[in-house]
Length: 224
Ligand SMILES: [Zn+2]
Image 1: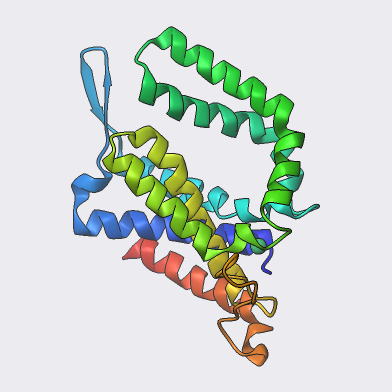
Image 2: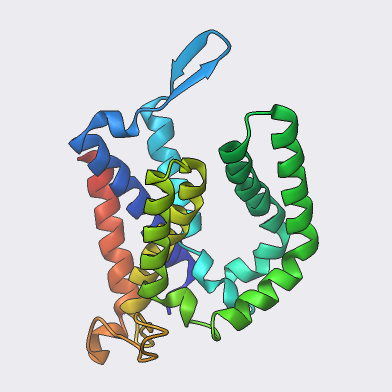
């Protein structure tokens, strides 16, 4: 497994790269307009690019949430209320336009996230079949991608976003782990076999290699 800094670097470069590629293919894909009252604003491209990199950087950490003592599982109890509130917001805006009801649902989500974080982590650790199983499976990432596509084309765009973010973060994370000697069970629960991208004599330097490649890719996406 790679360290959390390597996962964050891969996530940030991945988010920046996705933004730059989308911008190159069709700038309208990454152009967001905000309407406040009678005024409409275009969100500056620098803000969108930076947000893509930062969100992706943190989402790349989540699969290690089932490992006790990991960077993300140490911090999850402190921030789970925020994640729960964001999920509640996505749910609320997809079912109602009432500001009062939206605020109520967000508040309930935040409180549930704060109170239920211990139980949630316990259930997650059991449901994922142990550390580095379901959370490190490409099968789950594909299920989440399909779920986000179904929600998106079904019109529930706010709910498609968290599913896509989880799938994206998982892919970013797996890139950091599949190059290491431990590998990852990419096809769990179909197969529990750990998959290694490289033979051992390369994978023992895998984290350094992927970190360096990510750094180069980051320079390229910044200046290309
Ligand atoms: Zn991991």
